Image (cartoon, rainbow over all chains, first blue to last red; front, top):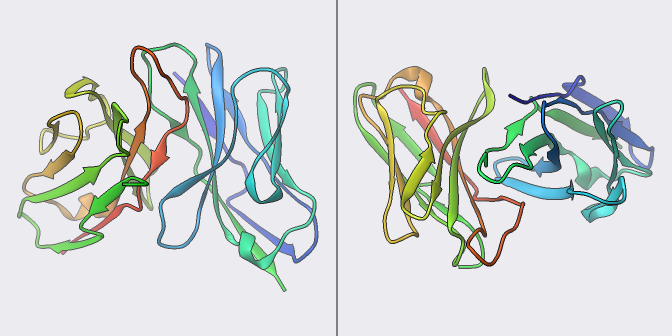
Length: 115
Length: 117
């Protein structure tokens, strides 16, 4: 079984300031890791993913995340946020085992950008 | 189509009525998923289809919930005798997965917002 913890339910940040959204996971097997963004009244859009290889992954809209296996973390960062980044962000994991297909999500972090 | 589509976008129903929610996956995507997003429970997996078969139904919350997929494409999620706790956003996702091609990413539709009065 897997679980994902997003410790911060809400994060307010001033425009052009840096931000880090935290994600920790628990799994007995190797996992794939994802960050999705959800804008108001919309579905989920993939920001970035870690499958293997380099632990620093870059995504859309200037976001990046670093996989840390020893700390079982996959924190999302952006050096300078914009008003348009206001949204809810979800961290998710899935097993690397071919057959167990579902995504397990964290509870989400609502990012609010303050002008 | 270019992305996953879902219909209706919004549905209001009375307690005890049946509802059907539809999902059109990305063309060529053989894997299809249903998730539910609610205030109390967050994002939960409901069911997974590979082609027309559902090897994982472990997330369906009760026997009032069922889903089918025909022609390896469109899927319908049916909720019978709806209850107020069924109010949520129902999200569908699809993924490319067949014998030759495999993607880890699930692509989501905009969701159906269900309100049970």
